[in-house]
Length: 277
Ligand SMILES: [Zn+2]
Ligand SMILES: [Zn+2]
Ligand SMILES: [Zn+2]
Image (cartoon, rainbow, N blue to C red; front, side, top):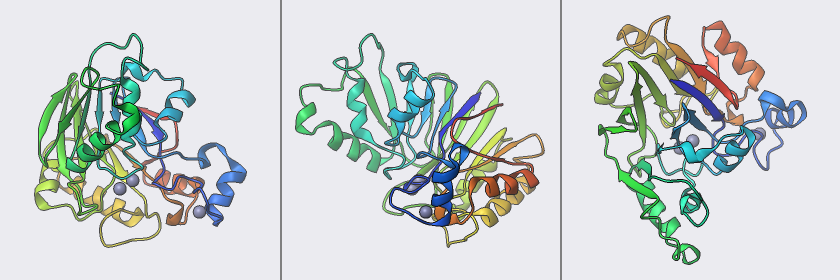
């Protein structure tokens, strides 16, 4: 499988829209890898993990044609992961010569905001029934989509909805896609994640130097997760370990996060980074 990190920031972006902190000021000055859009990952050319408001920019910036995308798997309804109103543009009126149905997967909050977004007045004349199919997921659901086997794992995140992280399997390889979550997932969730050898793990690193009581992870949590999964036999030296979904509030810039990751044999994601497993 090939992964392309289309965006690698938390909700506020990097630099954050209205912020003058050191990390954001440095990002505006330096540019390049110090600039991050909201988190989204393309697997091969046909599976999108999350659908943030920067999805349009990601397609244009990376020269991608999202008519090839067959499935969109959404982690939760936070705005940096789910911008449902753009789904209307999959209708034939805006998407010519794009046959087939786009399969979208998500929890009940993602479903609710999807139907709200596509039923606002302007779009009533363009029903999506022929173009987009919404598939509701519950924790621990395992499903097949376009040759991928995906398992929904309950995250440690916003308790108002069933936030999900995912195991994605194809061609004998397995990815753990862990954005957004804190470290305090249930024992059942950890058991499901540890049940097989993981070829790539991509972990929430929103908090950087800080540590909070669940919801998101920081660098200290990343070290604990790597230790836990290594002990469980789920990861080893062959596993690609990626940190991702960064906030300026974590206190480190990309160069510093990258140095931290390199010291530990990990990858620090940046926008348009590609990894193949
Ligand atoms: Zn997020
Ligand atoms: Zn800032
Ligand atoms: Zn979130």
